[in-house]
Length: 164
Length: 236
Picture 1: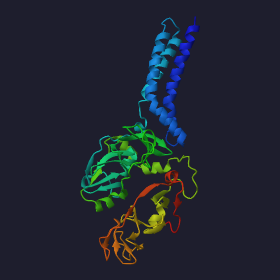
Picture 2: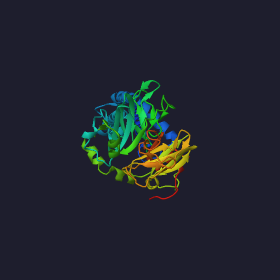
Picture 3: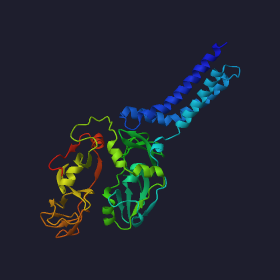
Picture 4: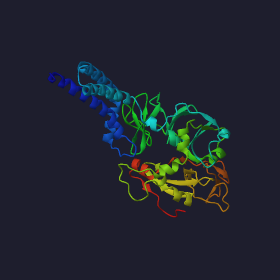
């Protein structure tokens, strides 16, 4: 009686584990304060690149298998297991579309500027990154760059990215 | 700090990861990964491409306002997370662990602050304490004469080629150290921290600026493994 379902169950478990791994492995490889090698970076890059597509396909397969396996007459534990597999595959598909570095280091999508005389939020001894193009001197206070790490701007009409 | 135009196309960057404690940026247009410190694409369709460096200085706000008129200043984000972060981030960062694949040697502590200079393929790190103690600090790197100056605020640092036309310049602190100016021994001309001569026979002439990266020793060494270190003389 249970033999025909063993295949789909194993497949569902496999699909769930693969989609979780494809999201978790790059998070671990490129985490802060870990040493990275060219090979680990290349692996993280490949997984990050393909994980949105792969996890979406995995979710579709998981839903298909779950529908086939679903039986209200089954034990409660079996039904919870099937539902959990679909939920976890869904979490992986969502995770593959997140950039957790932007949770840790808030981006600054629309940077604002004031004239130097109005910049009361910078102390005279604070360090700034100074970029100069004729007619457009800009100061990026280090305290802000050290928080966002990356600020996009155009200086004197030239698109730049300020980094720290 | 980098220009964002590559092969005629403007790229938009976001943070994507960390490589040995240096950020990886990703461009939205191709998905390539770029190393923040080198401006080079390390993975993806644009692998091997390099961004054009934007010349910049790291100055105190007072030094910047003294030199620049009509400038603009980046406004902080209006969130409380930034306020929390910005209180004492330097102290926290200085205590953060260092864990990189580079075999660090014992020439300097990993988080010693250095001014990194690269000239004609030669890299050298000038420790902050030596620069502050010895400026104007003369050295030769990549076959060129180099001088590091400290600004009137005692904190800002710039580097220049110590040479004008075919004349090597030796810059020294004057007897009356005012506004951080220095004097060249040969002509007696006065030079300001901007690299421009403000008095004397060479008044109006400018020294060629040299790009300096203020960095932690471990980061500079990770991306410049062949670097030399300036270890001569006084530290204060």
